[in-house]
Amino acid sequence: MTVLSMRQVSRDHGTGNALVHALRQVDLDVAAGEFVAVMGPSGSGKSTLLTIAGGLDTPTSGQVVVEGADLGALGPAGRSALRRRAVGYVFQDLNLIPSLTAAENVMMPRELDGVRARQARREALHALAELGVGELADRFPEEMSGGQQQRVAIARALVGDRRLVLADEPTGALDSHTGEEVMRALRARCDAGAACLMVTHESRHAAWADRVVFLRDGLLIDATPGRPGPESLLEGAS
Image (cartoon, rainbow, N blue to C red):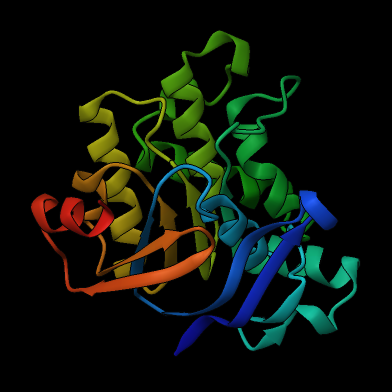
């Protein structure tokens, strides 16, 4: 089953001499249980691809379908409801709420979707434990290291039954050992049936994916099937 379908998706910013083609006629499908990594140079459109896939931005042209719902046919409220229910998003800048504890940050999207507080906390504690930070449940973001905050943000993206997980450089603030733990958690979520789309510049992390796609200047230029090793990924991204 296809969870994410993007057809001829383009995104332009600015006008005239300042016009930038962030994405150009991108076609991409991600199936349930599939882990797709996105690689490419800085400014190639990787983060734009994720924000459009998750309904945080709208394309200039083209169609984006998530879980059978055409995002272009939904209003802002409909897109927000779909994100809360089906999409987990790991942002580069984390976006943890400073006044909430780790558990409360992770609980929040579930509570917004109508889950009772006790059940939401139970799910949050499970997600935190899965990322190895269960002991941080009652700490505030300022009481955590950058790497700990990153793992809490990833727990928030994975909590509940998220059918589509979008991760923008999810291991950027982590040491190599913790980064591998995060990749293992993402891989496990895909193996359990979620569709995962991850932006990364690390070939060793992309090697966890089933498929790697390459962006350059907003164009999808290559797709490597299987789980390639670091050498092939570096060759494709060069």
